[in-house]
Length: 443
Image 1 (cartoon, rainbow, N blue to C red):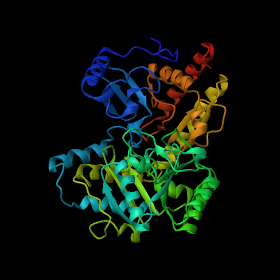
Image 2: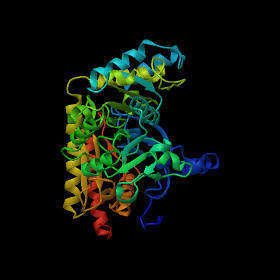
Image 3: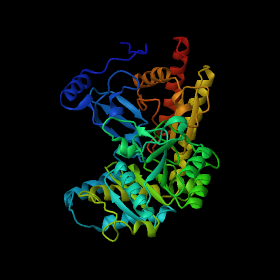
Image 4: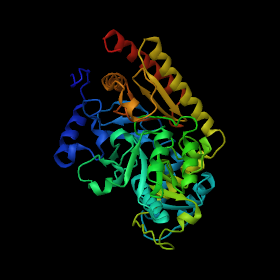
């Protein structure tokens, strides 16, 4: 069948179609997170039956090489045997206590030892909860209300972070979702990513009123957009000059772009760090941490309140500890870097061979391929990509057994489970896809 953009979309298997129809009867849009609905590429999602290593299987028996990796957490691949052994052992001991365990301190210690910015860390249940708590803490610590974020940097569905840029990117924001009060938006400013001049101008115009600047040090929610040289360093200088807290949202990049996170990779130390995904080994988890003097403002020893019944869940802690333990072994990130580089170069070369215009980006094991001739440096240039062409590419790979994110504006992820054969097979499938796009008039 054809979708609204004229892209050929293969028919889903009968079981996936029936399950999606059933889900739509009980769940808004049939999904529990919007991007899973495939609205960015047209067509319908497949429903998963199981996954191991680099492969994910749908309920109709089709197998895919998976580069979504649960949107980033599964850096060791699906159902890693050492992680699963820890999980099975822990579930036999109980799945939630509502009381402290040694495992919470063990994972906290591993995070503190790995990330330059973190002296104390608080476990929470999601990346959204981590960013929400970090901003509350920044406001409590500084006594200021205004925050600066960047267009296209997604920090979870917190009311005051669902804000788009105002006029010229230099005014206070307006809500980007129904249900967000305008009063919440009034204290959030959204600016173009990689634009230091815009930041400096806004800071001077609101001197003494800005609590923090929050950003993804490598954008992962508009596709992968790396920081330009000097951007992170410039933000650090502005924050130091104006007594503003710098907050890195490393929910995606933490332990993904390197064991020491983006802050270690780029050598820029924030005041607060938000974490999630990898540190839970595939289970729901988040964390925020930073300088001791800031974190000591958090209850019960400080007056910034934050709590959670399932925070520090023992199953997530066990999975996270084992994941970080495996990642800390010699050569793991070197192998991951080589595999990611091979995939990135292979996809780029295949596109160039067939004359398909793409702008590839990659940082560590995060990658994107924007269908555009323009350098992608911020949200505006990312939005200039040809989403219909991405949809054609996506479905060509999907039908051949490669699972990419169902949106031009999401990241791909390589795991340690992706073999040389997986990478070679993916490049070969992509080469055929680019060829068909050109021969079919879509290139």
